[in-house]
Amino acid sequence: MRVSTLALVTLVVGAAACQQAPAATAPVASTPTPTPTTSARFEFTVAPLADAEFVDTVGRSWTGSFDTVAAFGRIWGPDVVVAPAAGRVVSIVSGTSGVRVDLIGAGLTPFYLMGLASTSVTVGQVVSAGDDIGRRRHDSRGRGLGIDLGVMSLTPQPFLTPARYSNDVLYCDDPIRYFAEPLKAQLQARAGLAPMPLSDDVAGTLMGHWFDETLPFQDSAEATVQTSGKKLWFFTTTRRPGGSSGPRMLKITTLSGVGSGVPLPGSPDPASITPASGLVRFYLEPSSPSAWPEVLLVQMVSSDRLRVEGWYGKPGTEPNTFSSAARFFIR
Image 1 (tube, rainbow, N blue to C red):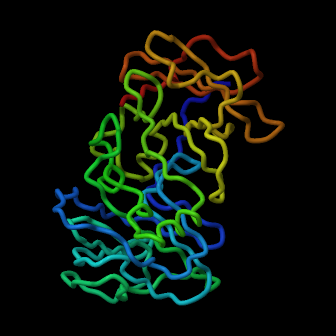
Image 2 (cartoon, one colour; image 1 turned 180 degrees about the vertical axis):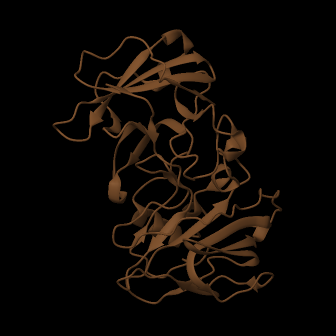
């Protein structure tokens, strides 16, 4: 049975959710491109949420979406959110995931807090580390939701097509490494997951990010109904659902409602696939023991163009050629 369309995982920029204390996700607003820093030293000296029970850091999530912030979660306790470093408030934006406060710290370093229910500051206000920024949100059962902390670096993530990504993704850095000791070591131990580069892009190979050729270039960074199903990623991750970690493994964010995106043994290494490889097949784990594995037919037409078609059915009966339902993706 051929699959005429591929349901791809939607890009979501934000923190990985904790089952007990889910972290907030980013509003639509994107941090401005970082400005060159001065010699002033920038560091966080206070955790934005005291005694956090859950701490996460940047990287690719289980689904392939980007975790561009450090998440601080705690179910019960005080709801005060404080500034982790001194800075000037430059923006306050409300979104579906709460309020986001953007600040500029020492060395002109941009950083931000997301997921607030309300704020105690105004645009233009200068705050010190530990100053009251606002209050966090709660779920319907009265449990406190997580607070997300993001920081921007001058070094962009190594995507092959940088213009396809928002500044929040392109310039994000691991906030944990900006904390002063001994708080830094305490937070790293609590997070348990080492930060990972957001990009697995390898020029001239299949590895990394691809976009449906019908997706307008300017819409690449958006996460909407219109862009859902138009992004294809071959990536590796050590993350698991619920924030746990495991051995580094390959995942593919393209499914047709059957496979999980984890290639079965025998599937090729995307980093070894080039235009000279011809048509290759990825066999993906079925969603249940009774389901057929999904087969993803892939061919690099050129170094920056890809033909893709999904198929599922009895193993050994998959086609050897593409049908008219095949789609094209580009870098």
